[in-house]
Each structure stands twice: as C-alpha cells, then as structure tokens.
Length: 248
Image (tube, rainbow, N blue to C red):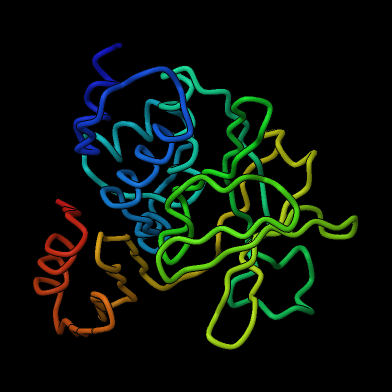
C-alpha cells in the first residue's frame, strides 16, 4: 500500500482491517468518507479553478482537508477503491432532487456516481451527494428496497429513464437521480452546477450538518439547531467548526 493510500485512510479515520474487497469493506469506506469529507461548492462560489485530476483532488481534499463537488469526491473515491482492488465504473447521472419534472434535460444538474461490481452484481456507491443519500452500497436491482435507519430508497428501471434511485419522503417517493447503462464514459467535461450560493453538507453519525451562505443547520436525531453568522470571521469559524474546512 503506497503512502498516499495510507494518508487517505488515515484522513478517513478508517480503523478496520483491509481484507480482500468485499461489500462490507466497501460500506465501511463509503460511510467513513461521508462522515469525514463534506460536499461543498466553495471553489465554484468563490470563482476558483477546479481540476479533476487525481493529484490535484488529492492535494485539495486529503492534504488541505477540504471537500468537493460530486465529480471530485467520486473520482477520488473511485481511485481509492481501485487501489484497494475493487472493480469500479464511474457513471454520469442527472440529479433530480428539487428539480421540476418538466425541466429541460440540458438544465438538469449533472451528477457522478460509482458502480462497484462484486460477485457479478453491481452496487451504487456514492460519496458525492452530501445531503440525505445512502451511506451503504445499494444493489442495482430493479424493484430493490434499501433501508438505512429511518431512510428508505428504491431502485426503478425503465427504457425512457434508465436506472432511477428514489427516496421515500413523508408523503411519497421522490426521484433522487437517474442514469443509463452507457453513461459511464468520461469523454466530456462535467457540467458543473450554476449554483452561486455557498453550500456545504456532511453526514454525521446522528444526523447531518448543512450550510447555505451564512446559515448553518445542525440536525441531530429529531432536533434542529440553526446558526446565522454575521461577518466573515464568524462564517470562517463556523465552517471550521462544523465542516473542519479552513480557507486560509
């Protein structure tokens, strides 16, 4: 195991044994990733350049302890998994959460996820959503229901939309994202979100932390605490406190 992989695993606070590739190991790594490395778009919001090369993402996320968007996080995670012996395919998807159903395809945000193949079965493994999304691998089987605590997801497939991952809300099922079997070729530049708001999200063992511009929300169990920062110093302190991100 090279020193960068060791550094990556240390950053994830991964303490389990590194046995042969398995779905159990994949789930442990995925969960640690989601608890440790936030989704954040600060480079986009602050008009900084973004690179999708492994060395640059490693430097940003692991060395400088930042987060990233779905492309950065899943590209980096796929590299870790391959180095550990997993069979991984990067796939492009359309991200439908909070998007109107009649939105033109070209205006639907792009997303990247991973398909990990093990024992002739593909599993969705995704560390790039940030908000509520599965923390464990989801078998890519039409009709499959996947439960994690109070969260419930299901896999649906049809010819018009390909594979679809739905999440159960209080009143109905909501489409999270969809993708096709041939959407795995990274031959085109990712279409980054045009979102100008500063966003950060991370899962925690008891909930999640979110940030939208100056407002920070801390979800723990059934409770919600909201903090509003009033100047840049307070905002930077809250960013460090809740996401362990320093923009020095």
